[in-house]
Image 1 (spheres, rainbow, N blue to C red):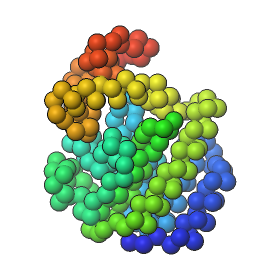
Image 2 (image 1 turned 120 degrees about the vertical axis):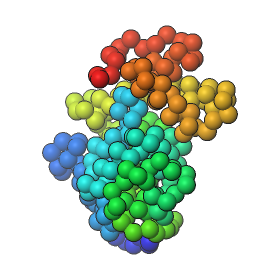
Image 3 (image 1 turned 60 degrees about the vertical axis):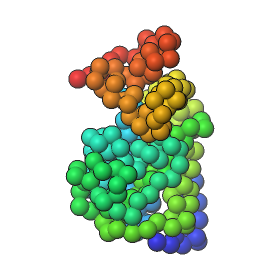
Image 4 (image 1 turned 180 degrees about the vertical axis):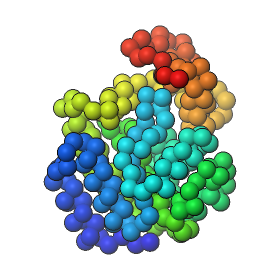
Length: 239
């Protein structure tokens, strides 16, 4: 697909003018709606990592996209996870048949086929991913990737302002947690990669599985691997 440069510029300019919807959540929903309109696709969504380091939708334009969240959560793999962990754009012409993520397809809504995801950054590191999907298989060209990255940059600017202003919301609390413990988790991922010859996505998922099995925060497992004191400011996840 091809993105019209003039239409993209107008859309991004309007969004950079700042929030006009009530609250941060309302503005993020507006951005996601603009993405869906620009790409003329079946849906788009913004995922942010929660305190268990699981990507969750905080804004989405289509209900089929929820299956993308669920499928990746159950499988522990997928394009949005890769975009987040690898800090790079990831796309597939047909997710259900893509051999990179064989366990994802069985949980997907039939309207989720071609998927494109890019990382959303904050303070220099990934805190989530922005994704679009289409109901038919198809390629994603450079203009589509560049356009989605442009929307991700707008989101980064707005989230940065919200965190700096200490805005009180669930989204901001998730971001503050992610920023606080990012370095320790990244170090633990690097340790697992070197120790077991894993790639970054597999190492991250191993950390997350261990945390889920023990009902602990990922950062607690990371601290144990590094031989460092575990943070004491966070409760265990609820069952």
